[in-house]
Image (cartoon, rainbow, N blue to C red; front, side, top):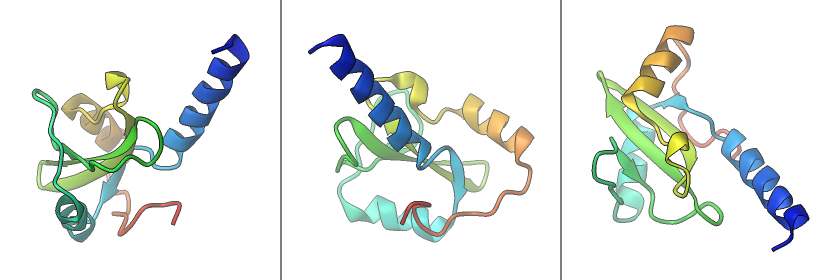
Length: 107
């Protein structure tokens, strides 16, 4: 793979991840995703991943924390993109009352 191809793939993945950043989601949305396919879990990572990829290594990740539900697209090859309790705390500090998404924001 050339540097240009790698740069193009990185930009494409970044654009895809930006389509569903860390967001509060409704309990119904969370439950729907939990029941779509068998969920995938990674030891030490909260929540579950939808097993069907959005593209390449990008998957939807959902977490239930503090009585609230969260979702985002993440890159399985880049754990820094995963939803963590620290990312949730930072998100909630900046967004104390965000709307809960009922479905993916790009649909």
